[in-house]
Image (cartoon, rainbow, N blue to C red; front, side):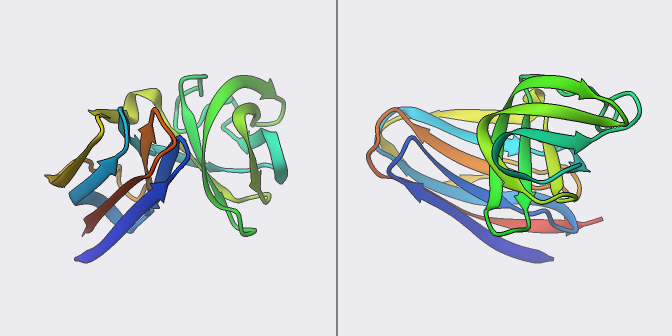
Length: 181
């Protein structure tokens, strides 16, 4: 069994961390956080993956590969969904909302993102469906040793985000294990 840890901190509106993907299902064992104000602790569970059809450089337009009907994993993307962009050129993981979905010919779809992203052609793009975003309301508080807060889909990553209504200091850390399939 593989074990690991994750953490995020910040003084802006949100702090993020990315877990996985791993060769199995990721289970959060424990999580602790300190938030400076009311906010949300969110878990974005990726469900499907595809790839970038073309590179994008600090652009809000991302063209992704789809099946011939414009679907990823059997479903059409909507403006309630998110993407996790796995940039191989050095930017790292990027969690982005989708503000528009426009069809492009030849088994691709053009997404307008809420915030610009960077990736190379063929980089992996993970889809987070709106129904797979879970959240816990936080206050100006510290909570320790919260158990079993999320489990990923098989061989998929998870983004963890702590938002705050102010720009003071907020922090989270956690541990996980991977059950192999």
